[in-house]
Length: 477
Image 1: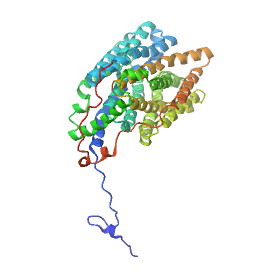
Image 2: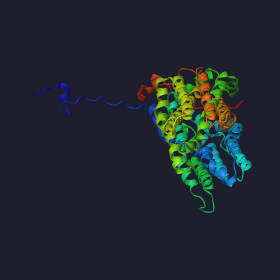
Image 3: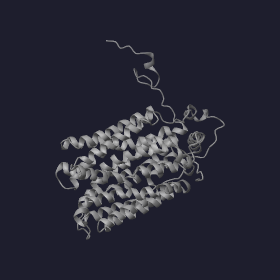
Image 4: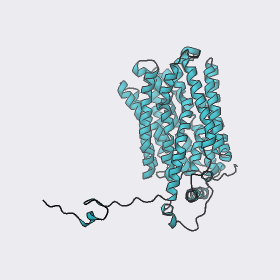
């Protein structure tokens, strides 16, 4: 038997019959800069968000314990869980404008240390009044963190990459509930150790974790690309050129002044959609352990906490590919609407399905909650730049997050008025449906600023390219 080999298969240095492989393209300075920024910044930002959301949402794990220990009523719990967002809304805009002026490193450190200490002090609450008051103060302390991170990402990543990075950042939300929920369950089991109840240990330890990471922030979080040694001059030039191009586009559209942003009807649309999203998001997050407890027929503890983590684990996997895919095909509106359908349908069906099916539907809802928010933030960051971005992102987040105040109160009121334990879930589902109607008005495609020349090898770059300021600090009006 004879074997015929092609001439190409007999090339020097290769085994017979093995075709040659094309050499992998050499990454450009821009691609290197984006990759390095992603590797260096995103994991730490995820850790920060994990702690932020853990300290915000761990009251759901403590709900039953607080009811037994300090007599916290369902109405007082709903008010305390939601009033966090009132204090949050009051201080968001000034906090983000300060960050835009003084830099992310110092201001993020201040925010984290402060909110961690306030969260730890929740261990001292004695009743409904002190619980509600401390939750309000916690909202003030944490104000500016989330919109500050979204603004910070505009200093480092062009819009083509931003959706993917924001999706990765939102891992912090889901991981806080995947890892933090079992951690909170373990801490709740530390009753009588050191003379403290388990819920006191939970608030103390999780709050001090945030303060500790806040101190670390001072040493590891750079303000701007120009401040770091891990980008070489060529990479800084490539990144700053692309980001400056985006800034010029927005300035030409008049979208870099905060006063202009306040008059822009897009701001109202973004804020309303985000508000409706947060009703579904926090309506699930605050009550998921309680809902799982009822489905399983057991009290909140380690078993409930592990099952409650499953929906958020599914959300991590879904968010790993859905927002990046939306950016890659440049169809953010269509992908965003699909995630809102997941939220609405998942919440609605979970209200009526048997336990196993209900948990599956909660997994679908959680996947929609996380990925929807990651895609959503590409719209306002595409629209606004400079001080307009700093102010408008804060406005959207502060007013939109009032949905977090409405959610627990809406759910409790619906259950009470309609005398049904599922009425509140119906209300959350309707909020997501309303968001779908408004989402139809969003742009179908995202902004693009990376040109072919930016992806050419360094030797082919234009000779007249000059470094330009990235995310310039513009005086507030």
